[in-house]
Structure formats: structure tokens, C-alpha cells
Image 1 (tube, rainbow, N blue to C red):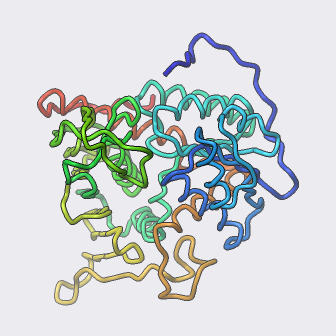
Image 2: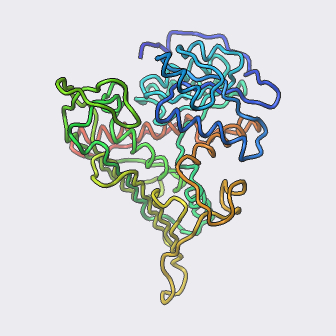
Image 3: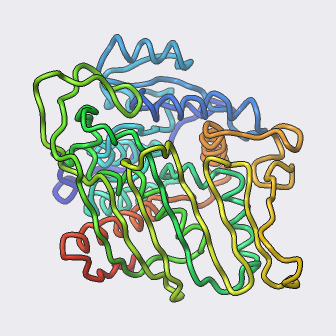
Length: 411
């Protein structure tokens, strides 16, 4: 990263200016995550009774024609081709960062120093040093009334939030095991092109950062405690791929028929870990599991019961109460669609399920309420840094023949 956080000094900016009753959002990036975040901002104020109404002020991308088309498609009032100009706009109070990881730190720090609130996609950065710099900027901004949040959107699945509630209430008792897998198959074909997600300089890591960041965050969020150490293996199964021909679309794109390039990230990572309480955890992240499209699965076992979740059935939670008589005990299906469940008071009648896109609506709701109420941000940049430290420990362990590697504490 070209920016030096150590040598530059900055005059603190004033708190964000807001038009009465609105929160002006400026978003950097317009591809897969940009579309998902746009859906969230566009919808949240129509579903929830919010203290501030999100206003889609401007979207930013380097390609003028593409960003103009994205603005028209997703309902943004204006378009910019320079993120610095986006930050400078008076009608923007929050910067939403949906770019590859190599630009997260520079954009987020500049936005915070300019007095803006920030929402940044996960993983927070490409390495621990960048994430630490972002946390320092967020802490300084918090003293000025600004909010900095990281986009772990799967926390916003109602069933996940409800699982956290049950665990916090002690329904599982002391935890014993956490199992987390996130399996996709969009890179099984060796002819799939070399997109930015396969280049370390842009993505930081491969399946580990892309998918592993989510399940590490969810494991720690659900357990209510942090990983203290890991032991890992990783592999890159396809080490060269065709270069990308033109722009990528979603997760992939068209491949060049001649030119090839080196894949510099992992295709898969498997690791075990230990939580602060002594509970054991296991993780698997891969984009090479044929037939698995977006298979994020979690199971938490405790002394008094167990919970299980499958993203491909995201309106359901499986719960086993081990205190019940053995003759009738077993896993039961909880349909998480009741108005008493998290986020669901504003949606449809019971039994009418939600989907992937609703996690971004819930995320937008939480960001707006956090800003309006002056509450601590959750998940915060500090949460993102903790996940980054786990990912770094996984990479270190895998490079050292799976040696157990401590995860540094935040102290």
C-alpha cells in the first residue's frame, strides 16, 4: 500500500453533516458486493422504521460507463470515478467500501479522517498491519462521534442472531465444540479465469480470506469468545489459470484463450483451533468442492445441548435440548420466521422466508441505528482485526507444517 500511516499527521475533521432525517451514503465499488449493498441501502428505510433514512447519494468506480450504468440500475443519484471526490462530497456522510481488499485501508482511513462514517466489507484488510492502522483511525474517529463497522453480513441472518441469543442465555451450557465449513465450487474448473480474487496483491488470501473470514467471525460471535490458537493446512490445487478477458462478472468471467498467469492464493484451507474457554473448533474453507454452491454450515455442541445451521436453509435452526428425557429428545427444527425472532418484526407473516439479500438490508438497518443512537459499532473494526489475526495465524501455521500457532490478543 502506497500510504504511510506513521509519518503523516492530520487535522481532525468535524463530525459528519447530515441533511435533516437522512444519511447520505457514498459507495465505492459496484460489482457483486456493490449490488448487494445497494439492495440493502435501497430497501432498509422502506421496511424498518429508521431514525435516519438512507439516501443513495453517489456510487464510485474507475470505469465511467460502467459506474454510470450501475448508478442507474441500483438507484444512485450520482456517480464518481475517483473515491477521493466521493469522500469530499457534502451530501455524503457515510462511505461504504465494496472494493478488493488491497484498497480497504487507504479508503477507510481517508474517509474517517475526513469526518465520514465507514462501512467496510470483510475481510477488513489484506494483512494485520493494515487492519491495525484502520482500527487506530476508527478509535480516533469514534472520539469525534463517527462509526466504523465491518460487513460480516452473515451475522444478520435471523437464525444466526437467534442462535447467538440462545447460546448467550446458556441454553447450550459450557461449550465443547464448534464446527464450521464454508464450501463453494466456482473454481473447480481449471479453465476458470485468473480474477482478482486469485491474486495475493489484491485479495490478500484465497478461500481463507474470502470464506474463512466469515466462519471465523461466526464461530467467535456465536461462542461469545475468541480463538487463542490454530493449526492449519492449505493448498493451491490449480497453480496457473487463463488470464481474464475483459471485466469479471460476479465471481468469475471470460478466460483468455492463450495467456496464463500464476495463482498466488490458496484454493482451500483446513484448520483446528481452541477457544479461550478450552472448547475446540474446526474449520474448512474451499472454493473447490464440486456441487457445493454456497454451503456455509455451523454446529455448536455444549454440555446442555447443540445448535446447527445451514445457510442453504437459512430460515431454519436445528436445536437439541440435552436436558430432555432421552426417550423423546432429539434435534428439532425451529422455523425462524416469527416476529419475536431477530429482525423479523418488520417483515412478512410467520412462515414466509427471507433470503441472502436480506442480510444486507439488516446490515444497513444496524448501521443507521448505530449512527443515530451513538452506540458502539457491532461488528467493529476491532472485530475485523481479530479475524485478521486469526487468518494470519492460519497462514503462518500452514507454512510451518501445521505447527500450533497462537493468535495474538488485542491487548
